[in-house]
Image (cartoon, rainbow, N blue to C red; front, side, top):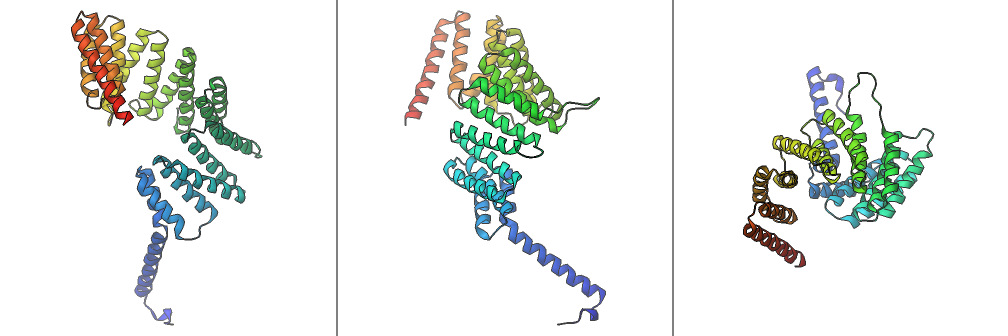
Length: 360
């Protein structure tokens, strides 16, 4: 072995640099599939993410923590590819491994992933049972994690809502909000830690809207909107969804003036948003036009519907049918009965074409 004490300082430094480079290369090669899987998952490149996570799992023995981490990444990619059966198998294996390890954090994450798969597969009773088990395990801890309790309760509520048990779902959402609520101190502003509560306000608000309890729905949706505007921005996607649901609730409650105000605000916001889907904006235009018709504002309604139909005509589908029917109603109101007849025939043609495509 060559005696290192005979080397100069610069030679020792060069050797150290070489070893460091080799070590970094070895580390990258050893972990490349894991890091690539995570990168593609964040970029929503589901197929690439699935490939790299599967390769990482098959490369060598991993610690239980790493195996569960890779498995949950693989399952998420498979869910997004609608490979629900494969994702189910992967997640169940992760749940079993986490239970054997006795690591509550790993077990909680694996059970959360299982709930997501069960919800995707329409197995709402199973999803509810899994979320309740996760909640029971967390409640059994010496110091239960409030955020986990909130998440479990929120998942139970979502499963109950999907099963049509709306009153029970609302009660579970209220429990989730109680666990997650983070009161503000003096002069404190909303922060990212409040986004979870904003999401629950929005979900419960939509549930109350579905139940016809528009007073509570609007109260919660306004709370969600306030937090989203403060944290994610006035022109954020989250804020626009809140406004859309608020406008729909006002419309269903018969508050035409209030609904018009919110739909106008929504359209103004969507015009400034980057990456807005034109069809979504056109859908809001149709809803606002229908309210304008009720209020006797036929000119603005005509303008909105003309634009909306031109946009929706590119994609066809039920939203175009709704736009055409609303336009036909306006044409009848304006005394253009022949034009209204032609528009309704066009709507019927779109419906028949869509039915034919589905049957094939």
